[in-house]
Length: 165
Image (cartoon, rainbow, N blue to C red; front, side, top):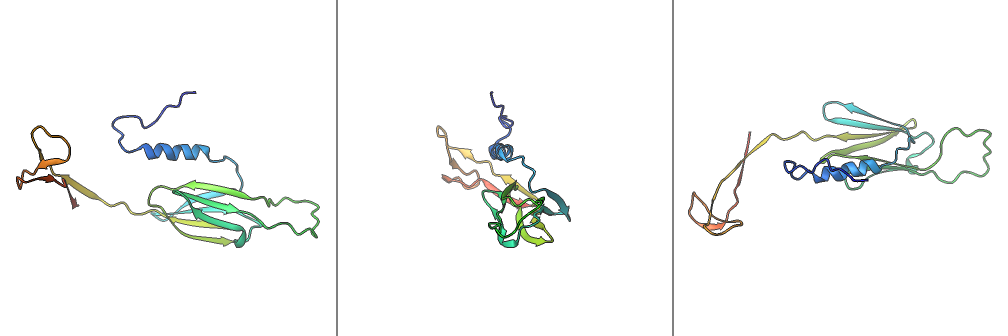
């Protein structure tokens, strides 16, 4: 099967990391355990809530690996003296991953009545404008060596000037 790239347009420069993120998402397990909710809290906040009944704080681990939030649960071995007539509360280990956008920060993780809440904060986008200074290239040369129109001196110019709106 031939794979079609969504970002192969010459007009989409520097978006190859999105393709890698989409590949990572597609490889994520579609298993439904443990169930979870994702909700928006305020303008820039998100909360992921996982139902982790039977897990203590010592059984859970929350970490970030390569812009991916990883939540793992592993319970200690069962007490052999307990005899279950019916066992409907899942006690198996799990790993649940969530791909995070650049800049999203994990603010806190709390365990409350069998629910693990992980709060995330989305940074406010900065409104910035940049002016690109155009310089005159030396005749017969290519590359970064240019003659500044303002000074007339030769050198490796830094053509970007930033101005905030």
